Image (cartoon, rainbow, N blue to C red):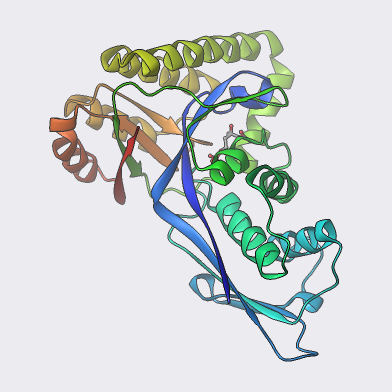
Length: 308
Ligand code: PMV
């Protein structure tokens, strides 16, 4: 029996603009995780996938080509150059779906890790990430690649699509609250709508993306210097730009406002937007008060995490 696991993730700065070549900052969220357990099955059984959380149980041989779980397994087997093994793969995840926490990429990462290791070919993090990126393309259409790499490496990253993946210094711990609006937001739809807007008004959108990129670079500096008030202000600035990009929603705005009023240093949507999650940076001593305010303002769930 072999187990693979992967954390969730949040994007601190730069979502959407990252698809257009601007930098973004993402961090893993260790409080939630996806796991895959691979066990040997009798000869002739083939490969079976079981995902009890979503009531799914099926044979690889019977799955359609575009099923993301099956595609993930097939891509992994193809990469390893092995034929379909006799195994069962059981998948669990505590990562909320379609809310900006990278649930799809984490499930894929857990499966690829567990399956490769079980078949005697353990893969390093970047190889797993590259395989998961192919699966993400099926979910998203044009993913930037940030989700798969931050989830595979499990560490905070400064990322520029196709160009740069860097770790960075975190001088003061960042106490973050992740508040779920309860509104599912499929990334593919939001990313597609932003693309349609960009195609109609390129100069306007390029200017917003450029400003988001500048904020992200400043945010990296603020994190390295431990300037938490400046960092909070940069989150607010990023949120204002995301609003103009058209990916905020009344639910996102309501939670952002509640967090700021309760003493957060800054707050913004995280991920695709149009619902999903909002993140708030709180002074350590205000963390519980901000979490309570988010719940009172309608958050369906609040996760506290620390980046250090
Ligand atoms: O998967 P999410 O909801 O965290 O969104 C991904 C972030 C985007 O920048 C909107 C898309 C991408 O591929 O980077």
